Amino acid sequence: MTGSGTDWGAETARHLQALAEISAPGPGVTRLPYGPEHRQAVDYLREMMRGAGLVPELDAAASLVGRAEGGGAGTFYMGSHQDSVPQGGAFDGIAGVVLPVMAMQLLAEEGVVLPFAVEVMAFADEEGVRFPTALVGSRAVAGTVDMAVLDMVDRDGVSLRAALEGFGCDPEAIPQVARDRAQALGYLEAHIEQGPVLEAEGEALGVVTGICGIERHALTFKGETGHAGTVPMEARKDALVGAARVIAEVDRLARATPGLRATVGQVDVRPGAVNAVPGEVRMPVELRSEDDSAREEAGQAIASFASRVAADMGLTLEARRTYAQPAAPCDPRLRAALVKAVQQGGGKGLELTSGATHDASAIADLCPISMLFIRCRGGVSHRPDEHAESDDLGAAVRAIAATLRGLADA
Image (cartoon, rainbow, N blue to C red; front, side, top):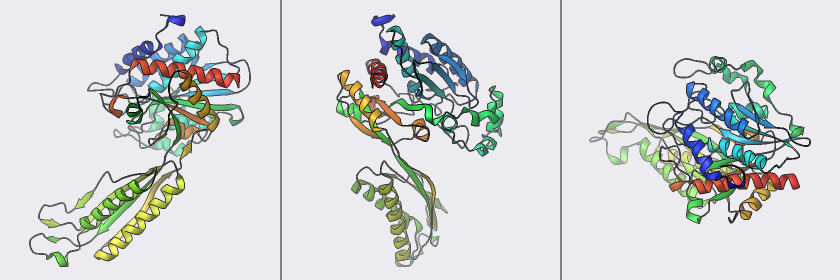
């Protein structure tokens, strides 16, 4: 189907299903960067882009970029990542590549010529599964890549530099990928929500207010191990009991602080025997919030609480913040354009925050950013049963096209 009769949702779903079949063997979708599946995905997306009137080119960071020249100065960027987690789903990341390509095809079929250029980007590696780094493609565009990451190796000992070279890229040319900030008009990333809010609200689409900042703390409690049957309770220095008190406080603080999400997702207990008092516990604490000051205050509060617990129980505590990434607020003007477009399509224009990191958080160093969320069944993501309905995908295509029209009119 073409022209005004095109079922944009069905067409998008068809492309996503074809791309989902480009996967390593096993359940779900496994498409790691710089490998044979990535190559096949690039070939598929290249033809899609050409069909939408875009000129595709693979850059030095292995991102496929489709460009459409406009009637004036400046460039508007859209896109997401093509890679997946192992045994992931058919929508995470890749939908944010296919949807804007379809929106550009819709505009082309309507004869719309935008007064600015558009680039749709399929970034190579957002998930950070193969190498101990991530967002290399989007950071290259923003001009913020640390070239030292090229020496990082995967589990087979292959360096990122060698993987890029094997993909036909020149990693030394990555600094040249950076876009001119003076010409960068903005960025839009479409993505499945990966959460339950839109489904609970009965809304197909949502507009993101910002991407949460993240920080992580490494806590190590040290007490004294001993025989579980012979050490009296009053004489114990149980590191796990101390850690458990902090875990409960992490949960309590997050529930009491609007917008804060806090998680202890791993606990390493030593010696780890059923009949031994735990003498040492190591655990990370991860905090996320769209409000950087609230997140930082929570981190300080957790560290102080852990110190008091250690002192009360006769434990020693080693605590350090190991990672911090600031929040990336979405641009008010682009948000308003997205809300209007969603409302024109019959939605409420519901606004919500993103607790997950996206390529948009890296592009925020280049230009104003925006994000459109698409409802996903059960809020499920990073699993084979990840799913978005074709009607919702069609609504997203139309909303992206309407947003571009609105920006053109403005």
